[in-house]
Image (cartoon, rainbow, N blue to C red):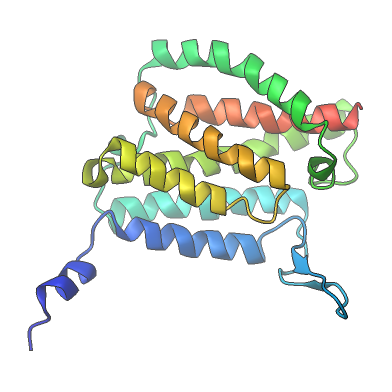
Length: 234
C-alpha cells in the first residue's frame, strides 16, 4: 500500500523536521537540565517541583551547549541535509558584524542594568546563588555562560532561522524562531519572557543581515553577564 501524498510529505526528511527536533530538545532541557526548579503551588496544595533536581550552574551551562548547540547542528546537517555554511555558523559579514557589536554591546550593558531593577528577575539570577563579584568566582562563571548563550543563538537564530529560511522565507522563519524562543522562556521572570519577543525578532533581523549568529551571541551573553553583575552590586 502506498501512503497518500500528504502522509508521504510528512514523512519526508526536510528542514521542517527541525521544529520537532528543537521542541524535543527544549523539553528535555527545560525539565531535566535546569539550574533551578519549576513547580506548582495552589490552593490546598503544597509546593511540588515539576522539574528534576537543580543542577550545578556549570553543568547546566555545559548541557545547554550540548542540547541546544551541538545536537541541533548535527540534526540539521545529517537529518535535515543542510550544509553547515548555511546555518549562520561562519563569520558572515565581519564589517557589518563588528559595527553591530559596537552598537549592541553598550545597549546590552544598559539592558542588564535595567533588568537588575526587576524584583522577579532578581529571584532568578544569578543562577548560582553563591556567586560573588570576586574575580576568581565571577570571571569563570561569566565565561561558562557563553556555552549557554552561544548554544541558544545557534539553536534559534542559527538552526531554526537560517535552517528554515529557504523553505519558509526570511520573515516567516524569523517569526517561527522567535515564537519558539519566547515559549522557551516560560518559567523565567515574566518581564524577561515579554522582552524575549522584540529581542528575538531584532536578533533574527540582525543575524540575517550579518549572515552569522556569533555577533548577536556576544551581545546576548553581555546582557546576561551584565545582569548578574548589576544584581550582585546593587
